[in-house]
Image 1 (cartoon, rainbow, N blue to C red):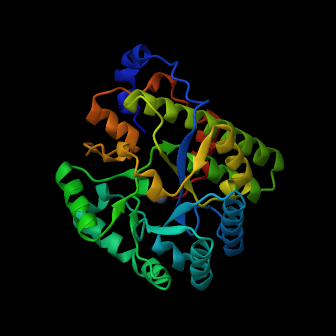
Image 2 (cartoon, rainbow, N blue to C red; image 1 turned 90 degrees about the vertical axis):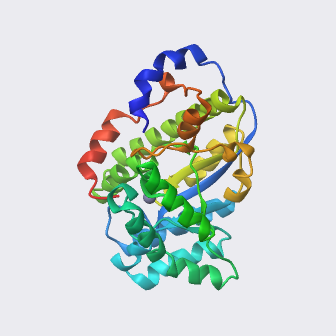
Length: 317
Ligand SMILES: [Zn+2]
């Protein structure tokens, strides 16, 4: 993410200074969970049911609202009825469900027409579940945060989403949880308790650093904390870490709010001018619009051993 900009902005980033430490101030954050019913390398319905139930119990216990994004194409890969029960459990817990396309393909591959068809194909199940609660689909999250390239493709997709009542769910904190999650599944699968524990610790340490960096980024762009929107995935790692994540937010003075509340922050009215092929989060997009550099020199990298293990373990995300 954004590596292509980092080198060029290094000097500017250094000049902008690494001193805007936001840790002490209070801000709000909305949590979002992608790739429902689950992102896992383990082909096991009880595992999926367990991780969703654990995440939801944790969110409720800590009074954290969340919006979760569904790939309807995943429902048939396992026990469809149980997969739909998982989705229902999110709504029953007071959470919201959004559309993450049917097949989790990139607009860069599908083109505008194919991508829009994939969004429409991703609607029926969540539309019906929401309708049963007198609600409708509001949120759309782009797979891989890829919003379409070139500009004409992005514009066509944006127009379609707008005309169909969708709001794009932006991301302003991305701690690459997916990269830790698959090695974590793999450690569980081979009963490697030591590795499982170390991945968990690395993940939580990295997430703390990433949150601080994105807050630092917001200070560079807006001179203040914004209401953040954090990208997470429906994984066993997040299920097992849900109490730690809640504690982390508390420690960092971040109060959980809903996605709808977070995006009321005027920062989210900033134009997103980016129509390149990379899946980048919204602060990087806004840095282009505002012509203000992000502090890439201090960007925390995912630990090398996690990156290597992910590459080995990943089949598809
Ligand atoms: Zn996704």
